[in-house]
Image 1 (cartoon, helix red, strand yellow):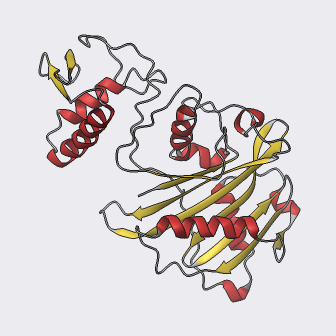
Image 2: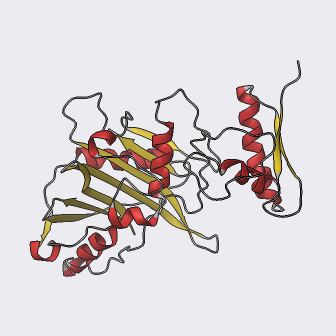
Image 3: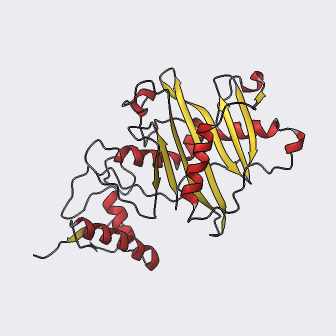
Length: 301
């Protein structure tokens, strides 16, 4: 169960959001649904971890003042983080990933000021400014972490970072940092290069911390529904025009487990919300791009 954390972000204060395989974000306008979807999309994109840019072709969260919560005066930073299981391509679970980032305002745009992550039973904390980088490593035992206690462990870890004093850090020379982009891999490599001999037995992590590896984003949906989808978008659209195609592809999939899992979540949502009872796709041809419709089964009186 992945967990997203946001603080001082678009009106969310110290908020933990556990995620399942299929998730529905429902609420009134301007309650943060699109902001959370956009952040999940951003954290699941390799490009973000090289640039820490909150405005991309797919996601535009804007400048610092547009991201940081405005309901409290004097806020100078916002925080994001996540917890997830690490799974190899073979499907084998190889541990957990914890990451926590803090951003401050630099010339109107978010600048990464803190990077915290756990790897191999070591809590690695990094503090950055424009021309400096400081770090320290604290032993931490993650052997007892499981899906059942992951939320409490993640919460305690983030609180320990917030409550800790910024002392006992080792510094990196300015000339090494000058003119270099502060990507996550660069930051990790700098720490590894400057580690003390007594810490050389640590096996450091330099992979990109993608939040969700296989992400399908079907919102925000502003596209108008159609009786029959003849001309439609099969690629991602910021207006959600690709959403019906994704649903059709999954519901007509020959992978029964995937289909059953999605159907279970969709029908459960429809019945709990009293919006619909079931959804059935119907294709008017055998081609992948053949016209189709999505029949919505409603409740009978």
